Image (cartoon, rainbow, N blue to C red; front, side, top):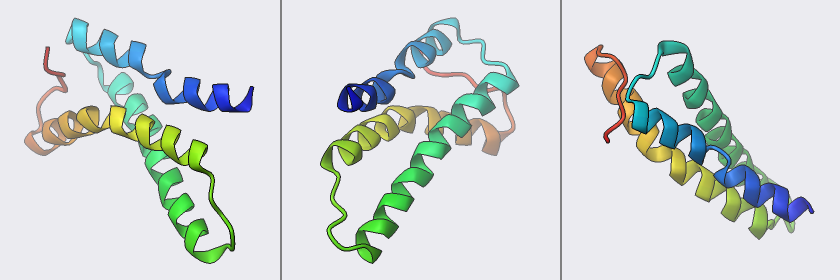
Length: 95
């Protein structure tokens, strides 16, 4: 059951990202919310790296793989988010 919840968490953001991509209308609060969800996962990966080098026998392949998949799914959104922030334009995902 725990493994299933990890896999489900990894792909749970897909409906939100697809909806944002199809509508093309991303308000500020929604964009920041999705960005912070992805930032949370990216910080989790930094925690895993730290624990891998500081704790003995810290290997959790299932957790690492599902976390990497989830972060990979956020990668395109991160790119679009930073481009819109850098250029000071409204956030729009490519269709």
